[in-house]
Amino acid sequence: MKYLQYHWKSRTCAVLLISVVISVLLISLELTDWAAQINQQGYSHGGEGGEGNKVPSFLRYILPFVKELVLIGVPMLLTLLFLKISRMLKRSPNR
Amino acid sequence: MSDWKQDLHKTRYVMDVLLLISFMLVSAPQATGLTGHEWLSVLFIVPFAVHLLLHWDWIKQSAKRFIQHISAKERFSLVWNYLLYVMMLLATVSGFLVSVALLPTLNIELHIQDFWSKIHHDSATLIMPIIGVHLALHWRWIVNLTKRMRMKGAKV
Image 1 (cartoon, rainbow over the protein chains, first blue to last red):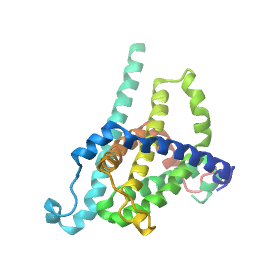
Image 2: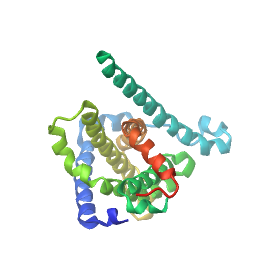
Image 3: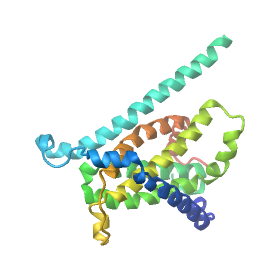
């Protein structure tokens, strides 16, 4: 772990400090009108009961990971496709 | 494979794999349960910090690189990495602000705002496609390192 140990204390402090400062700025979002509006309207994204209880128990452990694989995998494949097409288009005028 | 600690790229690769696995575990509260999700989120800070520390040189040079003549892909990747970092912070911070298991265990009482519940849910969902694009932008490195890691007894 020599690469991780190199100046790790000062670097970790710097990362933590910057992260805390940005986090404080992000927390200040709750003072905006946008936050007040959402708090007034209320928010719910499902939870206990409802349709979820009809799902077989083993699927409840698998489906969240399937959702992640789709949400990560599809944009990844689309980006790879876009990069491949843009590389091909760059090469084509020279031919 | 035992020599990975002696090579920066291999160290990054191993740590990044661990980061991705821990991210997937953290992002599945339906599977881990809310308590597990919140405690795993605290542990997740470690591989996330390790990822940043192992890319310290990139972080240091990134501001300078931005004003230099670099390719559009590199410029996009630079902005994307920072966007991912801010989204990760937003998901983490909002997660603490809607904590129902971790903070009450530590005797910290919070009034949970709907705003932070929405932000946590939305940012955690949005991070996934952002990570997908992030992985695609570094795909060549991932493929090359996977090949190198699979080579038995390959020299560093």
